[in-house]
Amino acid sequence: MSGARVSGVILAAGPSKRFGKGPPKQLLEIDGEPMVRRTCRTALASRLRQLLVVVGHESATVGAVLAGLAVEIVDNPLYARGQSRSIRAALSRIELHAEAAVFIPCDQPFLSADLIDRLIARFEETGGPIVVPTFEGRPGAPVLISSSFFAELSTVQGDEGARQLFGGGDRPGVVELPLACERPLLDIDTREDWRELLGRDSST
Image (tube, rainbow, N blue to C red; front, side):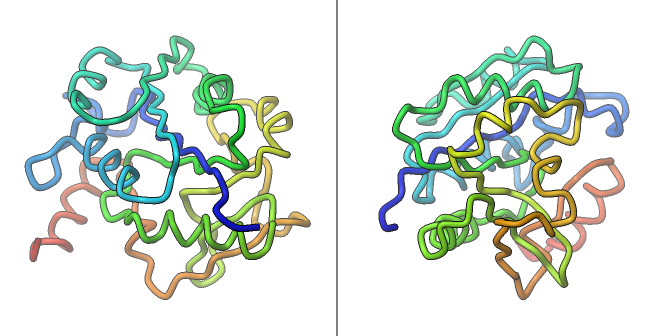
């Protein structure tokens, strides 16, 4: 397999319940830029052929900060029912000839285009239907899922999303992409996470 057509889906619909009062974490600024826009720019610098952004909570505001980027906004009015609803909303908009999709949380400030490209390359090399980045054996995100699994993916429930397909990573067909550094997988769930990660990244 070479030159695979892979779409990207950025999950940016959640209400950020653990983040407390104030704007949702999608709009949290990292280096003066809303985190969701930063994630989109990173994804657009990768080999992804299409980039969907699923919005829900404060959808108009989140969509507005993406102005000028080559992304397709997907509205998920059922975002309160969990991440699975965002996945379902995106599946119907993924281009017909896509061989796989990379599902990307919007809250990983150190995600790189290189990591996304390495997931795609691993998929091309192995044909594995699910490719998961890992650090010291622990699975993380983003996750690449072959189109052969889209029908099953459309049945997931709740807020765990695509993780239901591979659990702890021991499902047959799951291919790991071991990373030497945890940094690209770090995410922000709370304001404390934000402060800690900004302190950790104070050199940039």
